Amino acid sequence: MPFFRKDPFGRAWVLLSPERGLEPSDFGSVAQAPERSRLSPGADAAATEIAAVRPASSQAGGPDWRVRALTHPAHLVSARPTVTDAGDELFKQAAAYGYHEIIVEHPDARQRLETMPAEHLTEVLRFFRERVAVAAARPGIAHVQITRSVGRAAGAAYDHPHSQLLAVPVTNRWVEEEVAVAAEYHRDHGRCLFCQVLERELAERQRVVTQNDAYVAIAPFAAKTPFETWVLPRHHASSYAAVAANTLPALAELLQALVSAFNDALDAPPYNLMLHMVVEEGRPDYHWHIELLPRLTNQAGFDWGTGYFVNPTMPEDAARFLREALAMREVRA
Figure 1 (cartoon, rainbow, N blue to C red):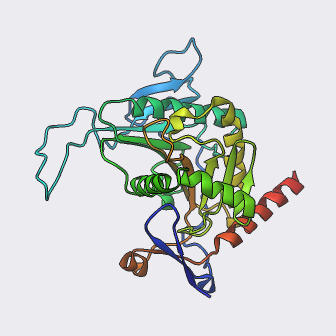
Figure 2 (cartoon, rainbow, N blue to C red):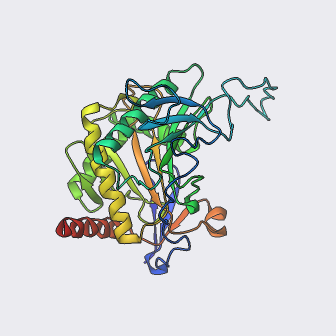
């Protein structure tokens, strides 16, 4: 029987309709990348290196990097934007100030998050923390995000393993909604909403996909899309810039397990990974987290017209399916 679920972290409702069934994805599987790409060492894609992990003897811009950040060639925002009219109370506008980077995660274009050595992925996650901290400390920045798109159907501009960092002076719609709801909950109850939900999920265990000493992966109660999965740190922190370095190997391990489970259970689907955080460290009412969304369905006119998502897969079923995929992987290992 279809029914509605209220998103604990937002204002919207989700319509769960398991009778509708999950049809085969129109997006297919992510193909193996070619051996080289425009982001490979020595083939730089019209971009300037901003920062990199490389040997101490190496020169900036050289080809012997392990992880690097480049200026994004799209130039969607600028650190020195042209001055614009701010508009008025009814029609506001602002200069497109900000920072937009491509983070190239590995020199080998054929590597994927789930196949690169765990210690290298840990290095990538540490590099994320450094770039986020730099961006959040810049004057006028109100929002910082890391996004990762895998597969052209998920919006990836390159087949090479990469992420994007965006830092801008305006808020993000989804994070802003989470912040508002979490602040209201903290004001009324004196506790972090995310911590409360995580505590409840661990007690009930129906939607827990996997966990370790530092992180927990869950299928959210009101998942907007099939197999949507969130990764939350057990220890409360509002900004990824404050993540403890000694927990990053555990985060790398959990992310690799999750994406491998997606591949096994869903035939290597395109997916998006998004880091949700606030720029202020130490906020008691917000909890940074990572959201992973396999691209299995499209939003149709019904979804856009009603303003709520229609999800044909129960989060409890998705969590169980992914747990089984992880268990089978352990058996094969």
